Image (tube, rainbow, N blue to C red):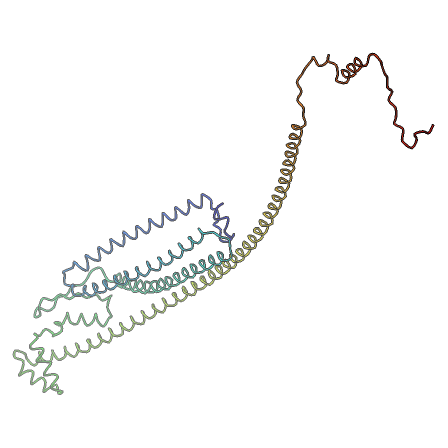
Length: 422
């Protein structure tokens, strides 16, 4: 008798066809192959990351140290999460093994059924809690992934909009041979104008050296009147004429205006980027909310289905229990009838045996009596020719009374009261 025959219909494992078993094995094999490929890919990416972060000695070494610290922190978080998942899976595995051990000790009793039901509910609750925690974690990861992907896509679009050829400009011959690369399509208009102005007019000092330019700024800050500033600058800055100082003043005014426009444009650009990021985040939040609502509806439908399945299993369990009770009652009645028939057969057999014993005893007694009265005579053929005893006595008497020959006739005796009566 198989173990499945003692289980209720709702919990009995349904027989599967060979095609379904082969299909499940193929799906399992494909999933394991995909997991192995992902492990190999993750290992390769991890090696590349390690080479870029921990074996780099270039000019960006200080910046890469931040990524190293972040990578160590994330690696620690992944290990901790892996340990937690292992503990949760071990707990589920222990519950399932406990349930299997209970199934091995099949005893169709109410206590056994109740213990099975409690084990099933405990496993079901543990699995649902584990799935809920994993679902929340995956939703957070998907949300972060969408935000990151949108930011990467924005950066890629910006990079793809850059022209392929970069314009190279050099500063004036009075300045050092510094090369400035301008990309007008990737920066605000004001920034491009400011960069062009620097390239065409001698950089941030207007073609002057650092010493003369710093004296000019100090004097300009000291005097509010332009004429006083020109006079002192003419005396403090050797080798510069009044026309050069006035030209430098006009250059600096334009420089300050363009610099202010540049800062304002950059602030507006940052603000626009923040708004764009907020819009992207809001869009991602809406998508995540829709996904959560969809998942919630799915989980609600799943919970409803699980509840219906649970009720169906309970109903099937009750039916199975009633069926088993009825079978038990019928089995008891059958055994009682069998016992009664056996008792009757035993009584008949005892009576028959008693009768047979009586017959045997009777035959024994008869044989014993017969053995006592039975005369065993030996054969003597000569006895046939011998005279009988009576005849021999008469002959002897006859020979003795030959002279007188008295004959006596037997007659009845006469009573005394008739004597003398004729």
